[in-house]
Amino acid sequence: MLDLIKPLAIRNQSKIVLAVADGLGGLPIERGGPTELEAAATPQLDALVADNVCGLSIPVLPGITPGSGPGHLGLFGYDPLQHQIGRGVLEALGIDFELQPNDVAARGNFCTVDADGVIIDRRAGRISSEAARELVAKLQQIRIPGVEVFVEPVREYRFVLVLRGAEAAADVDDTDPGRTGVPPLEPRARNPESEPTAQLIGQFIAKAAEILKDDHPANMVTLRGIGRRPPIPPMEEVYGVRAAAIAVYPMYRGLARLVGMTILDPGASWAEQTEALRRHWQDFDFFFLHYKYTDAAGEDGDFQRKMRCIEEFDGQLPKIVELGPDVLIVTGDHSTPAKLRNHSWHPVPVLLAADSCRPDEVRSFGELPCLRGGLGQLEAKYLLPLALAHAGRLAKFGA
Image: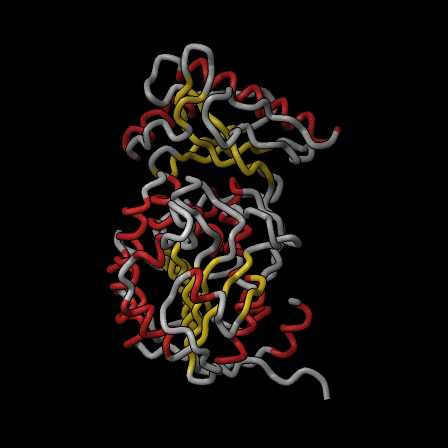
């Protein structure tokens, strides 16, 4: 698709905004009830959808539950199956760590294990960033022969591990089992070429466990998204847009940097993010705004809090609309139903607002109404080409 789009891309003065409420899609707690989005009061979204077009976005493929990386790459117009990127790389880029081509990066979680080594809290009670920095300082003492070891704090219970000088392949499975009640997994190589890297990671985990054994609640670590930074063509080269990202959480800043976006200071709240958009409105063609809190509430299984987060997200939309974007897309990178306390495979509601769109008959924004939307159900990677087309940024294909 990138090869198709690149020669068709037109540069003009139009503005495109992609507003992503992380984990937006949900499920009813009881059959027949509303989802979090349907239960929330969203007058701004309802007003937008009444005059525009909506549908459901499939982040990767039907039935496939996406991580945040694949979910966002699709929204940025990149096929997540073709461009597979470890979460460690994204976290490292998100904190401005200068990754070298052969660095191996992993996203780490502090977690809580019981006396038998079984995980009882995957996020160590969501310890504060200040507490995590103290623990990271302890882990920075770890030395492994043959490699340089970097451990850097990210946010709350998250950190980044980077191994420099590991010359072997880095296809190594996560050690986070994704659930409680079981011990952390071993770092298993997916092929013989990655076995030396798996052994290095195993040494780090063993040393970390010894250092943290008397700390509580963060007395163990798990690692996810182990890998190296892959080559990926930047958005301006492919799509002809000067793109900027307004995201608070490091991982999403890393995703944006990976595809060539300029990272703007987002402030600390959703209101400050929309204010940052206003300040930089004349400087860029494409803006990615990321709102994290819907996803966090879903992962905590808190239906009511996720509903309130959606309402907060909705409340700032007039500030975006007042700027007059030529195209506004509102969606999520994946579904995170509070009922499941995790990401899920369910398609995500999507709204496209533009003067050139063909309005449908939907009058409220939610999972059930979007089933009847004019966009139908489409893979997320096609949303950016649709945005470019509605912004007059794609030439005709063929004679």
